[in-house]
Length: 427
Ligand code: GLV
Ligand code: MN
Ligand code: MN
Image 1 (cartoon, rainbow, N blue to C red):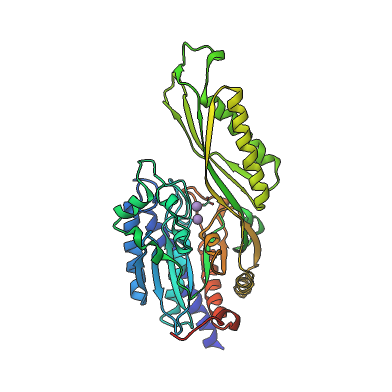
Image 2: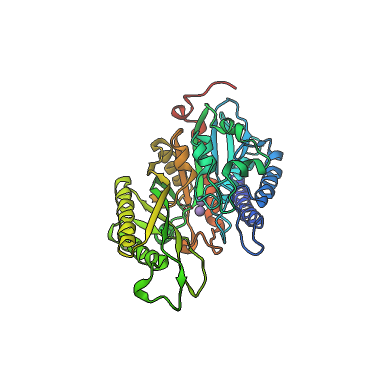
């Protein structure tokens, strides 16, 4: 009895040390940044290379075979006693002025689960994937890393340019990778599923007082860019009635975006970037370029909102005698997570003593892309203050401990599940 209790104390100590280490490692990777004082690590930027090196240093001593695929995803394989694999991962890229946990936390939790196995082999292998691009910052297009795994990285996407005119294909070459090898990044045929741990990035779990959540579905998202073109002219001499002011048109349209999203329960609409040309205080803007992000759990409603906002942009432009053009950068449908994995995660969370709260994800995740090809599911960790996409983003050590415990239960459950293992072949 006494020895059982001391085993438990020791296990708890080890788990708490592991949680502290996950947090310290997230903070360490946050220092690999394109900016001096804040974290920004976009697709195939130089600090991404530092991040890859550090991850490799952590993975290799665990017997993990590490490689970089042709779009810069880190792929670490820990073999099992049979050949199929379970993928556990998340993304390594960040937005500008980012927190330390969005994405990276899921990769480091995967690594910690392997450490906690202490060399024990499971019947399936585990592939840790650190996706190269999920946020869509550099090419205004998210999920580049995970799209390569499901074979959805087409020529149109490879020819998209970043703000310096570098195409996605050139960015891959400049990083020392070979775009011709992209097909080899595809999921291996023996992939059993995909699990992603991620911070919730919202206030729901905290409000309910729960440490962990289970994602039932990820809402769909549309991303578009718009350009209003008017006529640049002198801001001091041009009377108001003779202007073709692209900035005023854009401003009017932005309030329409807000109005349209407020009018539909569950919808969100964001104009997150705006660039005016020539961008001078005493010159009427001749051109304004901006982006739109619209999300809703129903794909039909999301499409209706987008169509309504395109019409509005045209009406405003016509009324003000301007031109507007738009292009669709992303139309990603809502994706349900896998029912079997959801139930297994529920059980694993219950075993940790936490309440398994089922919820939607308003943020996009690589899991929604992987779900096209393999059973996919996500575990959310409570986000203090609901603050994310911000340097103040955080997690608590206690919640990370619970996530590790949940992950270990989940691996053991899957290793013992005839339903999960039914596709297995001996290695
Ligand atoms: C990813 O963070 C998103 O924009 O949902
Ligand atoms: Mn993320
Ligand atoms: Mn994010």
